[in-house]
Every structure is written in structure tokens, then in C-alpha cells.
Length: 186
Image 1 (cartoon, rainbow, N blue to C red):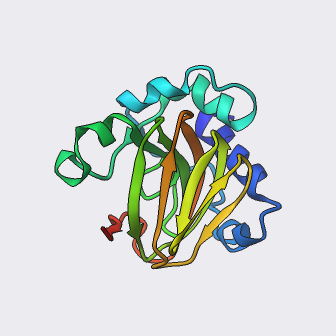
Image 2: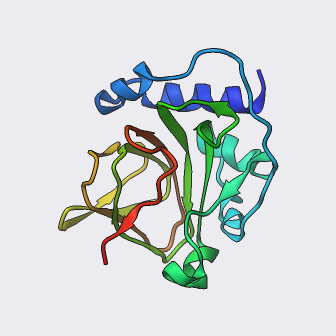
């Protein structure tokens, strides 16, 4: 099995027991079709060093073979945010495993960064894999430990904040435009 297949299988296995993920898995692509990817590293990837074990270890070990991306530019949140933010898609419109119904991949935030409040049409589930981080859904912030699922229905405002540890989280998206940029709320 190729890297994309192993990562997709790891994502599926990680969320199989998450009730909110059932609809995402029902839309999961079947088949071995692959889309070519060009490996791209971002400054945030340096915080993958030292992540070991399980799916986080697999992402860290193969980070150089993945196409890391950023949705925003310097004018959106400034260069400091971009140094500590990135994501890579495994399944979806841009990932190596094509799907028009679901997207899945990994979000990486370096230490001491806030991903500001935003919302999007797509329903979303996050599963933090490493790093203790703060998550905001609506008004309340709460600290979330790794392997604690977070569900955001479409258009629900949410934000994330790290402190001393970087955050690596797998994400699932479904519904709406899977390539849409989030609406920043403040």
C-alpha cells in the first residue's frame, strides 16, 4: 500500500469509533485511484520532529513526501501565523485520493499560535493526535487532550489556540464546497 493509502487507512481507523464521523465514513472513497502530488514543506513542519507513534509518527516520518499547504496569506493574519500554520490533504479535491464528497487530512499548528475564529459551510470533525490545545466553539474555550474528538456543524464559529506544544490534528470535512476558504469572524 502506498503512503496515501496508509494515511487514509490510519485516518479511517482513528475515527471509526467517533459517532460524529459515521456520515464522513459513509462518503469515504473506494478504489485505488491516485492523483499526483508534489511534496511541499512549510516552516511549520519543523514542529513535527519528535512526534512518534501511531498516526502522528507516520505523518512526522513522511512529512517530506506530503504536499503541505496554507489557505491564508500574509495579509490575512501576518507572517508569524504563517510560520506556525499548515495542512496537508490526503483525501479530497486536492489530496492524492480523489473525493468530491469528503476531505480528510492533517492540520499542524506550531506553539503559541491562535487560529482565529472562523466558520465554513462544511461540517467538520477534528481528532487531535498530539499536543494539548485550546478549542473554542461558540463563546467558550476548553482545553482538549489528544484523541478527544471535536465536531463543528456547518457555519458554527470555532477557533484553536496552542501554548507550549504544537498541535497535530486529523480533520474530516463534508458538505458544501470542500475547497472553500473559511469566513474569518474577527
